[in-house]
Structure formats: C-alpha cells, structure tokens
Amino acid sequence: MKRIGILGDIGSGKSYVAKNFGYPVFNADYEVSKLYQENKEIYHKLRRVLPEYIYKFPIDKLQLSKAIIANNSNLKKIIKIVHKEIRIKIRSFLIKNKNKKFVILDVPLLLENKINQKRDILVYVQSKKDDILRNLVKRKNFNPIIFKKFKEIQLPLAYKKKISRFIIKNQFTKKSVKYEVSKILKIIKDERNSS
Image (tube, rainbow, N blue to C red; front, side, top):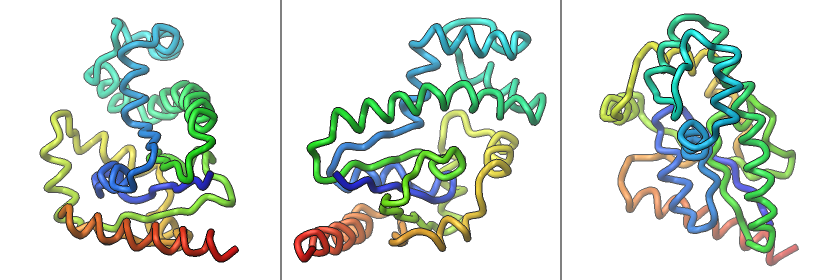
C-alpha cells in the first residue's frame, strides 16, 4: 500500500483533490468534526483544559471558536488532545485498507504533527489566493481570525511545495483536477510496474 499525502493552503481544495484519486481517503477534518459530535471522552478532556469555553456536548464550533480567539495557546491545547485520537483513527484506517494499492491522507497538519512517513508520496495542491478566499467565505462558519491563527501554526507553504513530489494546480474545475490526478496516478503506477 502506498500512502499519498495531500498538502496545500487552507481552502485550496485538498479534500476535493483527495476524493478524485478514487482510493480510500482519510479526511481528518471530517473525523475531527465527528469527534466533537460523538466522542464524550474528547469532550471531557477539552472541558478539563478549557472549562470556560467547552461547556456542552456535543461540542459546537462556537465553543471552539471562542476558545481559539480568546487565547493563542488554546488552539494548541485543542490540537494536542484531538490529534492523539486522530492518530489512532489513522492507524485503524491504514489497517482496514492495508490491501489497497493506495490510500489518501487528507490531513491538514500532516507534516506539522509528524504524521507523514518518509516513503509517503506528497502532493501539493496549489490554488490562486483569490480562488481560495472566494471558497473560504462560502464556508458556513468561516472566521478570518481563526483562519489566521491556523495559518500561524502551519509550516510555510513554500516548504510544503518544495518537499512535494507532485504539484496539482487546482483551477477549481472537475476536468482540470481529474486530469492532474490521473497523470500522477499513471506515473506512480508505471514506476511500480517497472520496479
């Protein structure tokens, strides 16, 4: 099984690109959202460290937003608790899909939380800033302050782009993404067949 890690800016279309590979996708944003809605243990841990913000289950975005905006260290506290559980979910996902040719890791802090492995095939999703902003403001709970705080904890985009083996220029059209993804898969499959 080959692991393909999707990198890129917030709102660059990483999840959309990941789905277009046609292989099992671990979508960390979706899994985190599920944790907030379904996992009482996560709720209790977050409530212990952020009692003035996390006060009811299921945890809603408003509680989290207030905590993140109030103090720079709160985001790190949240990530520390949540990413331990995400690591467990990733391991389970990898075991479940061990017989697949490829798995796609759509994990926003893949590098920052050292979830990637040396052999991972990294794909950087590059999008124009205007397109990204247009996409972000369409999101239901978009908050520019929280966006900025997440950007601050991420590695520089130039670094992510530099270490990626492939770059997909996302023009936010189905045709362009499918074409770019199929090119990458062909290269990887050809390499597997020749070795």
